[in-house]
Length: 208
Image (tube, rainbow, N blue to C red):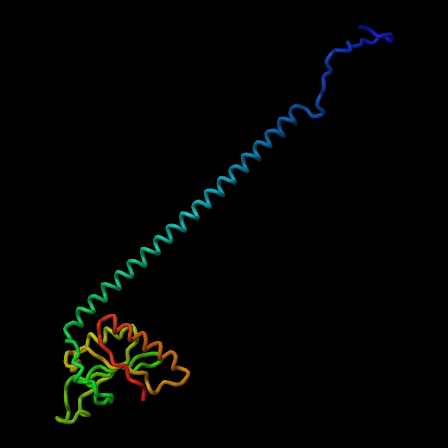
């Protein structure tokens, strides 16, 4: 239909076509970029979840490994204690009446432990009497040992060093300075625990 001006007029009810201001290529490219970005985000999220899962698994495995090592160490220590206890059983139980009244280290015939800040002085006798009838003439020996070597040193002693049986005397070193007293006391407590664990009777003396 033509208008009065001669132009062709569309019917009033004819649908109008809307044209995008962007070419089809631009719209398609933007859509593709959006999909790529979404895929990248999903990949990053999955990677982060996987790393977090690996971290959790790694931590769990480390905890199990640490627990297994601790159990193995405890079993090894228990086995070592059993062996040490068996070696010490060759020494008879102590006869208290033989030493109950002794409070002088020079008259003590069994192992004597003088505990210092950094070591333990182990005094022993080998059963040899230099002057018969004189208790002070018993042949004595002494050695400095560390706390972790104390039990091994006691096990290595000959049977003659255990005249009263399986008992030792222990005391804080009288030469320890005042500032070292707390450390000396801790060392005494560590030594006493070691003795108790292996069934060695002890007599604790006050330092003179």
